Length: 129
Image 1 (cartoon, rainbow, N blue to C red):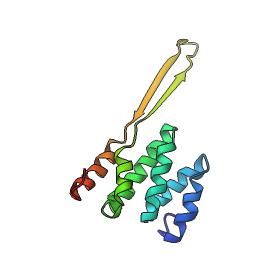
Image 2: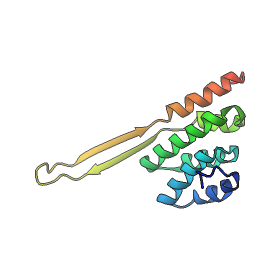
Image 3: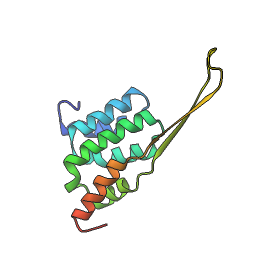
């Protein structure tokens, strides 16, 4: 649907964000490809509630792509939400194997700094902070 860049796909794709797994991954990528302003708010809401670091990374990249095209027409409240995005921290415990029996803790932090910076720059361009 995203490859067609048909704005009629925005609402069904936004509804698809409720599903888990490959469905919401495909939906977020398609919404970014469509580039319709109506997709910005659902993409932000999705990102605010996503705890899977892999999906959050992809969603953040897709939102960044969409905002690069649409930041000048994105409403101020949405830019404020993007500027206030909290980092996503993912902690994973990896069990050792027979060669390395100790348990390892792997922590990844996704900070959305590119997204926050883009939103702040647009608000400054508009004369707001």
